Image (cartoon, rainbow, N blue to C red; front, side):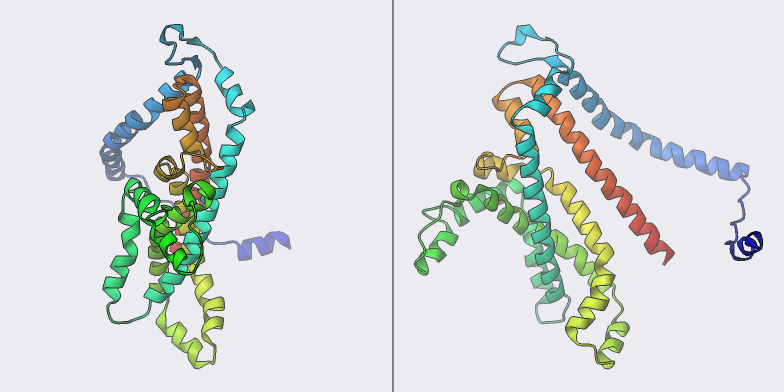
Length: 312
């Protein structure tokens, strides 16, 4: 009985395509076209990474350049048993996670606003995208001096109008300062992805829901949000990968003080302040492994999203 049911309900198998000489030639041509780009990518990414792994096995401090010798895994012991790695990892998670969540929520809010037709819609979209186009170093300088400075910052000037004393944001609230700046810069990125999702939603379905008596909130909750799920996943994963590499705001605004020292800034500190090439390389290898883990999860989820979308 079971065999009969399996034969009855088993999906039809796809017919096999015969491999002809023409198809083989086409495949060789495709691989030949991709090969230069693949070789170039390996040369500029994998060879430096292998050199970094080699450096991480050395006891190499630039203050003592004549005492270079193999330390094997001693640098990795310093990474995992020292007092800096775990706090930096926690700071990285807090800053990255908070910035992603806040920029995603604000991006969804602005995407909903910009999805409506109004006068000057194109200009408004251009102005909303501008923060993402500003160089990170320039954006950090603007936030540090023009917005958050104790004496001349515009935010403190606005607070004084309401009788609130000036706040030294960079020193009193360093983590909050970095999160505010990164949220401001990456909200347009989230907004663009979510806006594309909103514009891909069928207007006929929304109009039918409105005719059937569904209010704006119920339409958004039961129709728009499920439609945006895949776009939210893409925005979250890509934003997390980019924010893991944030360095300029921390180096310019807080210098890693007050719990704002992320893995990227810790690597810079060991290499260019401590001048310990071996330990810096070990921190770099561990940071790359963490980034690859996040990127692998992101890419796997992205491919699943695209495949599911293609099947529908």
